Image (cartoon, rainbow, N blue to C red; front, side, top):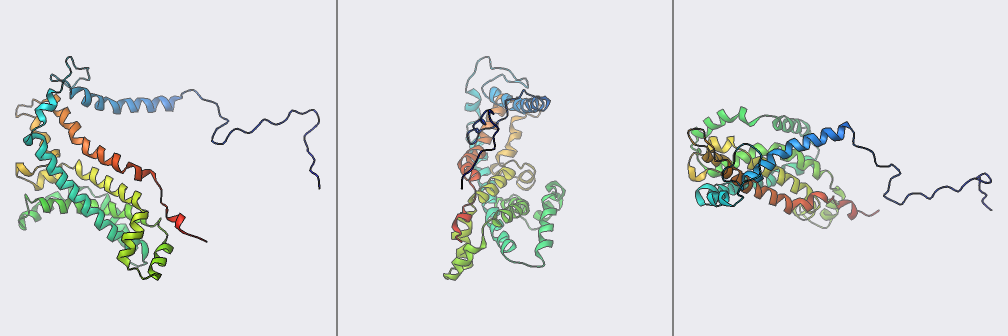
Length: 296
């Protein structure tokens, strides 16, 4: 059997298809939407530019200006135990402990919600969704009264547990969504070989959902790292205050603010979160490899 061409005689041959990954569309000119996005990006970049420039200017003000004599005097002024080192260490203990407790409890709570069917699962998830939208400032007064009654005010472990509790609803919601993407057939194969539920969760489910665990950890740390109201209400001793509360030290009682030192401290205060994001960023871009473990 022979194939004949239906192209009319004298017609020019079809152009070769574009290479894979290329588009036939030509470059277009920037439109109003692009200009609007650039304007919004510039608005967000102005405060960041002020923080960076003011941190090298000993005579910084609220104006965004290049330092007349750039230097590291502001960093040298804030790099001391009372201003930076101790508050940063308190933030690491407070937020790192809350993140660890939140991730562990979220995994243990999301596993039965993802793997077992129950009549209480849907009401529980709806309660979690409602709790995610509840502002923490609305419950701080009764929480503070409770902490006073049980004598837990100015207790670092109690503040860690409360921060973990406040971040737990959304962490459970996120973790369950990531855990649903791990096929249960892999766990069933492990159960057939005699593995227990906890061993299957630790050695199979968690390695396959590392990107999800990284997302939950980063989200929880960012949420607790920038939390000012909770440690301000529950911690009283100056040697226990985290860096989010110690920002008050840059404002005098007469309303004067050391803008240069405040900018330098802000950069140092943001560095741990940025470093954690860079460390876990590779896991955020990788997808689950669970589907590759299944065979027909």
